[in-house]
Amino acid sequence: MNKTFIRSTLIGSALFTAFLVASVGRSSDTKLAQATAATPRQRTQEAQAKMSPQDAIDKLRAGNARFVAGKTRARDLQAAVRATAVGQYPFAVILSCLDSRQPVELLFDQGIGDVFNARVAGNVLNDDILGSMEFACKVSGSKLILVLGHSNCGAVKGAVDGVELGKLTGLLDKIKPAAAQVPHDVQPRTSKNDDFVQKTADANVRLVMQQIREQSPILREMLDAGTIALEGGMYNLATGEVHLWPK
Ligand SMILES: [Zn+2]
Image (cartoon, rainbow, N blue to C red; front, top):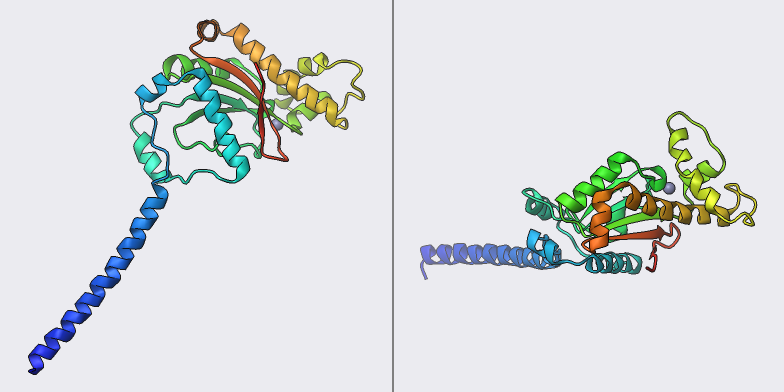
């Protein structure tokens, strides 16, 4: 063996080692890619059109079950950003409270482009939100409107205690008719009574559902035709569970 041969063999083995290291690196990259491959594929317009209102309800139910079980899906959010840049086909529009503890995409285990999300303290209705729901269903093809209240809601508590503060006063006034619907034997009628607060939150969701139907001829027509569904639900801040109301 001459020196040149030995040198070239050493160089060759160094190159082989480098290749091996690179290959191992690549293989762990592949494993990472396989892990993120569990990311649900982005919904197409065709897939959205094929969904029924019941499919949309089932999807939210299943998503919340995964959330509660701590088995949410792996999601490549950057890939989802790229995939949804040219269009969106969300299957539901959800009206929920401003409360920071009930972010709907998280608690229903949904990703970018899956649901329209309208949030306002006390999940009350106004014309702008109603217009947004009309856009979501009539223009964008969503199959479900969900009105989602939550336990221990500060807006409901403020309403039953008659809190007054700037523009908040008018917002809380919208919840008062719900409190008035709670049977009078539920006493005392203040935020100190958890039962009264919860019953008011339940009544508020039902009231908003009724207002949606009454105030939007466009949505009422779609509901009557069965092309969309309107559901109510209550999120439990203590357990992470959403209770969707039976029909
Ligand atoms: Zn709230």
